[in-house]
Structures are given as C-alpha cells and as structure tokens.
Image 1: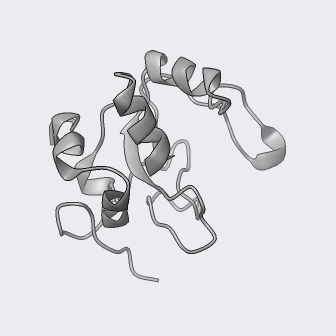
Image 2 (image 1 turned 90 degrees about the horizontal axis):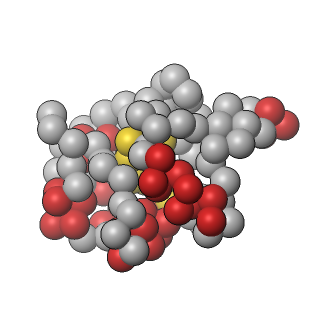
Length: 122
C-alpha cells in the first residue's frame, strides 16, 4: 500500500511511531472503508483537547492494554478522527495539526483553511 497524499497534495509523512498511531498502527494517518471514524488528522495532543475528548465519551488518556493502546498525554501525536477534530474545532478546543501528516481525505470533514489555522510550524 502506498502512503497516499496529505492535505497539501504531497506524499503523506509519518505522524508518530511512539506511541504507534494510525488506523493501521503504522505511524501514518491512512484510512480505508472499514475506518468509520476516518483517523486522518495528525494532531499534537493538548491537555485541553484530551479532557474535551474524554468528556465527549472518547477517553484517550487511560491506557487500554487489551487494545494495545498506551494512553496519550499532552505532546503526543495521534491520528484523530476527522469528525472529532471538527467537533473540537467548533468548540474552540481543536489541537494543533501536522499538515504534512494529515491525509487528504480529512478534507471531506474539515476545511483546509481551518487545518492551516491550527497547523504546527514545519
């Protein structure tokens, strides 16, 4: 499988390998038809976002070893569901994103302008 393209029309770059992220747990924010959440937005976690997500029913803080999930902390990078990022954006809680590692299909759920407004420096 190729890496695909990012929201800038370039080759998709790795989001994070420690912790290992992505729908395929290969470090890339790639997706397929089985990924109903479209885990395509590479975001750097903030304490504010992690608490927001937990309060919305998606606890990304607590480790879940049965799912090989280490739990996240502020500063970790993770492939977020595009719709969750959009929800956080609308609530003023969106974490910063890595455009080079955000898969282009995220644009079905979020605008490039909004992602760019929250982009981490290269």
